[in-house]
Image (tube, rainbow, N blue to C red):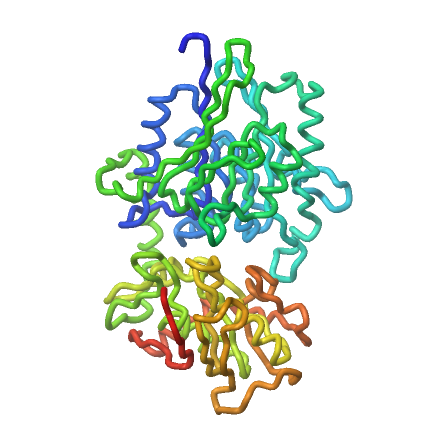
Length: 502
């Protein structure tokens, strides 16, 4: 209609450096193609990213994130939220990525501990004009500690504050006309907040995003991320959208305004291209750039053959992407590394940090780095038996029922009944030698540093004599595969499941 203006904000979240096409993801070249097609059909379009852009394909790491920044520049991204995995690189990459990609990281709740001001690697918000409409985007990072031992020391001077509180501050600042462009016509939040549906597949779950919509209802829309779902809904009359993950699609907020820039409505939506991957033609320029990165990296150390897979080794269900709770050859390889490098009695590993699996044939360093995209360190401690049980209960949840916190474990024999409610499923648990696990006794355990920092419902806060060993699970797995020479697909037998319905 001639009497209205329509602005689209397109958000790619949790791309995780999936720069190459597969039977599950678009890859950079096809993603550029579908974004450019959307922009052609919707001329007044802003492109933003929702964080966790860089962590994933080892070629992104090899080139310090340059292939992803190249993608972001190609599609004209103006801003990005800060994802939790951006912090995996410390703070020194932030400025480099922004220069390469010609975009701005925004995170209003990322603060310098001493000054309580925004650090020089981000801005709290970004204001841009599209067809005369002033759009302010306030960035928010999901809450986590940045001074953990597993974080780079250059992050220890930073902290993440309450997002709703900081959004309120900047909404008031903007609405008072304090920006040099004046008062914005539209304010949205570009967040890395996690949001998903509950067990009823209707009720949204994710306290940070929900509280933001409730406490700052002036927001015209919110982009969420982190939990890798396609979502389109309203929370407290605020439009909320999330665009899946790995570049399989994107989220969109469509803003319709009157000619005098009054907001008429905001419609959340998403585009999921998973079912039409083979129909999409890649952008040739981006395809050539990605292939050049691949050739250069594999002509060097990433092409090294470290072993042979005698058969296809599957880690995740091909249909639902769930991690098999019984364990897999790859998760048990990680457990073996944890046990053997530390001489611990018990080991636990977050097997959700492993990708699909390995195809039959030669295993290159690139292939292993690709599936082990989170390079976790090894942490040892002493933990009581009852707390080991609690963490295993948390880890044997299911993707469909409770929302995945998959755990691999070793040094134990466990029987669980899935007819029982989550948290009460373990029927028997003992050490591998048959000795019962005693509730108050301390055991030597080894875990990956991700769950050691109490992520995903795990709790190791009562562990004694905690030591970050300085060893990497991934590097130790490389050496173990080299020593063995090959991998075989065998399912561990230490976890017995009753009444499995998933």
